[in-house]
Length: 130
Image 1 (spheres, rainbow, N blue to C red):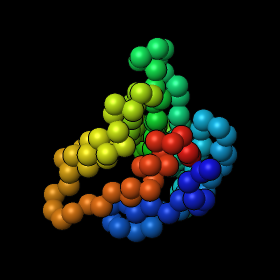
Image 2: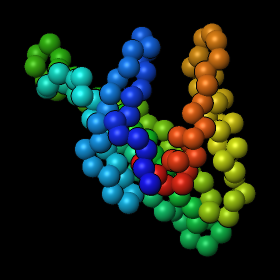
Image 3: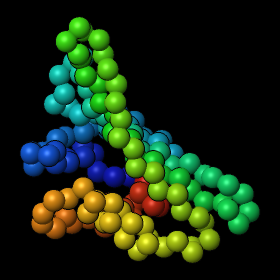
């Protein structure tokens, strides 16, 4: 199972930004911002990696938003924003715990109003979907 294709996400101006899936395999998917003008680009990478052994066994879910911008000298400059969710396999940390943590982090950046979390997307990521 995987997330929708295309992904339509909001930017800071509340405008829709469409990301088409470039590929999807068992542990990774990459989406490309179809509105970005070359050589500048934005892409979204979602990865799921097993971690640890024994009692510390779990999964790391990483979401990376990569940006490439052209500076005034014509150099391509890269930047990224990452979200990493590490969850043990034993169920001690629940999906509700992860949602609470994400909501707190998002609230840190919010200035006014309520930001709704897409519970179904969080749950899909934690199931290893991309």
